[in-house]
Length: 106
Image 1: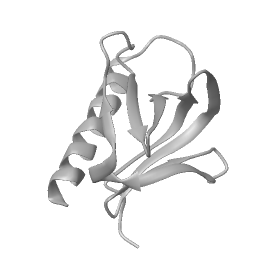
Image 2: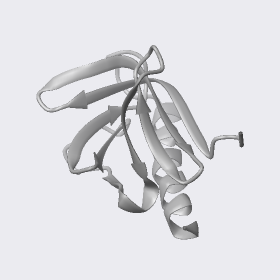
Image 3: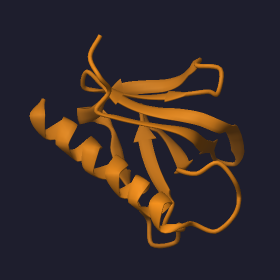
């Protein structure tokens, strides 16, 4: 098994209007994006070429919105509800860049 291209733990994953997990994981590996619960169960996954993601103007700097298999998820790339630090903002940017790189390669 290869090393994941991107992995973040402690991610809050919401599917409007409810929270699915407050300590989940987002992983990009072998050309697939996977959203996992804190227990490692898969919430959703899809090939990166079929995933749309971005940072909407109304979202905080540590949040991204991803559409996976037609379902919109809000991803908050930190483990608590406090304001975003610079590291968390960078984490969101790393996620979006890794998704773009992985989709461009396939």
